[in-house]
Image (tube, rainbow, N blue to C red; front, side, top):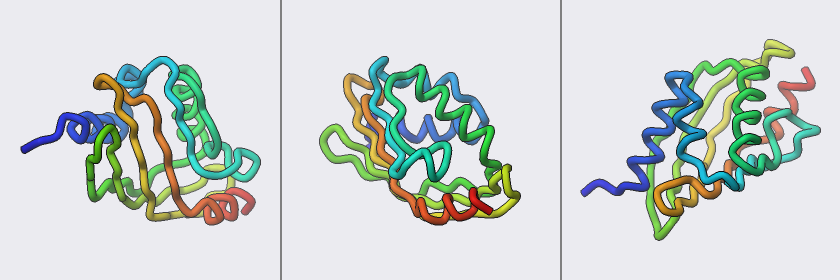
Length: 133
């Protein structure tokens, strides 16, 4: 039996893979609480991005700083209002040309069919190192 929250999150990953950010933004609550573990001083896309407009800027920042070599969501789990996703990605950091990859965990909080919160945990030290060159 399919879970509507998992189906929503899978559709967001599919849009990201196609380079379509508008469907992702449309699936957010206006006050979405979006956080990528780490500090922006270490890597431009880390930190907090509060509100749908800020999340648009987050995706712009990702595009300006990273080129995807692999983006692989793997496992999806739903518990109450949360969807947990494990995966792996590999990027090239545009500033330095250095590769970086990491396993990751994404946690989505779904409220009335929209993403109300997002948390990403990855190996931030690898990103900071690749960004510094």
